[in-house]
View 1: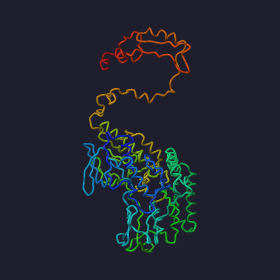
View 2: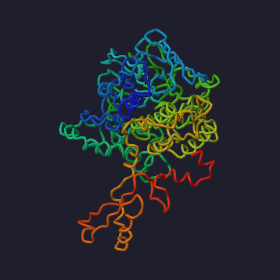
View 3: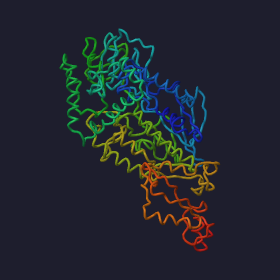
View 4: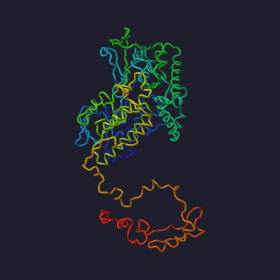
Length: 612
């Protein structure tokens, strides 16, 4: 959805088609991104759907507060078709490599499409591949020996029949919780293998729900959202509260009472839902604080894990046998289906070979430390920007789809500058990247994400100043937006296509200057304010002076009549009219034929006068 947001900005919002030739290379056969790749049973948006809606394409008739995956998939198709964005997309096109050619200031691309290799090039390259695109398969000995069906939630087999099957689910992130809850109802038996407990919370923004659980919107509610004003107000209330999560629940220096209350409410909810099996409290309720890892709303899960056909196993898996799984305590269980709900490869490196300045690859630069610039730019990668897939992005700081718009605006500011100012390349300075990441890590230390838990947010090195957190931005969404409002050109090395960077100035005239009849004072409309007009300035003493003003060369004056000077609060007299030959009133003794600029030149030394 990041790429579609950029396309919408270019085509409709900013209308940049005159100087932006835009193409999206998409490796899948349709739009949808992660919602096309993920199709497992129970797939549901884990935030309220009205804040997981493209800001430029609202939808009034979502089925439920937390919408199901198939509905989101269709919504993305509908939005693409409504705004004719598919015309920019080349499907079944996998980028193999991108190599920077510094001599010409372009990226050379190698693309695999339908089994063939094609080539393209571009001045500006944008990575919008997301981070949830390459399934991470568990590294368990013997996996290849399993004679049953092995499937990953990120690469689901739509033909898989789970009814009355013996099923194992590995992992208790969002996909594991949702998948387990959905399959328990039809499985013969189902076992959940987890490494440790996780917080199973009420739904995000539960105050907008009836009982903290997901719910279907009523026909009356959907009808009310047909009013754009009502829909916008509802979305703003939701998104405003969601954008306050960082201050209220993540940043350690603020809102301590709110954090304590939130933890107590989630723990109370879990204990209530596990009331019939109190022995599960210690195995499912974490000791670390909420938000150390992503919260997982799961309306069905806690009920499902207590059913007769369900079981929880928190003993480590030792190996896979031909018929099932063996745990470290020696126990073996047989299964027909093993489901890996183990997430995706957590890498900020794009899934193609990317070679920038001096032959440096992004993979080698980020081998140990994933240091980027505002999650948007990368070291030694000129004219490259990322939307949503760079290091330390706002993936849990508020509305992620709104953040796509903020970054797109930033990218297009640079694109406009590069295109109009004859710039060959821009790249963030190494010293700036270093300083930025020192700052970033200092703030991350003061967040719940730096707590004592295992999280995919933390995949980097840890040392005296590094927290290891590479996935998430250390601030609120409002903070991120403010950081992107200016392009901060001082943070970049900029190279021009000409030895003189001012060549783009041209001949001193603009297109507007060359347009017959154009308004060359349009800018006054931006500054004029009726309420700023001064009150009438003339007084009775002025009238005698004004009466004689007509004797001055090139001037006329009309003295207002005493009884008609002001009528109903408005002036009825005519204003003073100066001779049209002048730009300003003539000083005494000035020849009538001189304009304001000419008068200034006459009073300057001859050398300066010649220049003028």
